[in-house]
Image (cartoon, rainbow, N blue to C red; front, side):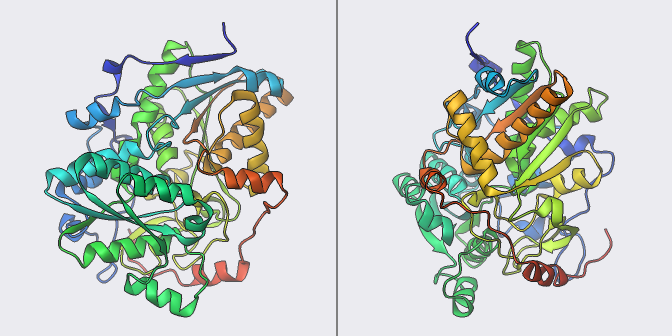
Length: 455
């Protein structure tokens, strides 16, 4: 047997439905609220931003939602994505644990993000939409939606968090190659952006700010809809194809995870790998230890409050109950730009509140150490965000070594780092530092959480 074993499904075995965790939860999550009335919002409140099909998925209680044939056909360009047994990493760690990773870097955009970008573009196209505005942190989501927009003839306008806009010029170039426009956020193109730049001309930006700008564009232009790459229920739903494939592939390998690890920023790749296994557990299947890994510089799950908050800095979105650091919190600049979001997906927050998952925060340098160790063993250079999951998996494997336990660990390697090599250059040059957030700024942001009606 080779050192690395790849488990692939035939194309025809790509899942035909997405899995909806809502159907199996012991209690439903608190509903989104209208910021003015503090009452649960309805589909009409979301109509200015999303096509009807996505709104229906956002609120659906159905366990399975069919993947449209045109979407599934495009998925076959890179799906099923491979599941690898990390034998060389296991050997390097001298661990009795078995480590598997689902590798989503094989998509055209290099990450898991096309799993939702393609259906979102499809449903917008079906509704006759010709323009979509969006935000992106490190650029993975912007690249994915730009790719999907090219497939369906939709113009994509991307507001990219300023620090990443300047750190990752090749992500920007990739978006432009696919035909999208990309500007640094905060920008002079929206009222929200102009107000922030007037107060803080050198703002590094945040996902919360970029979301506000993209939402403003969609809300004030009848010909434009908005697309989000994480957080919302329908986005997490689309990503569950990852976990569903992994279940089939592990069955081929004659294995099943004891531990599942995923990095968390907004929650989409984490939900994608975790939710199908969690649903199996909730229906009476094997209990799995689930670990969410986040950056210590933006620790919403480990340091945030579980409370109603705005999803954006400009307060243009509904109130959602989530683990949050406060919508006005601006995380320090770090290379894992896709994890610099002040809140966590409501569904991920809900399962954390129910005690179904655990969370851990790591500093920037230690996750890059893990990413380099992984690359030298397995040959794949992870994206900075994915390094958090790598670090979590390595730590769990070392615990198995210490305790003499042979456990099966699964993690989602959600994207490659080919457009993030400046981060690795900074790491090797000793320029990568562990940035800490300002405790007083966090306290102020949490003190400003909106009051909300009891769910």
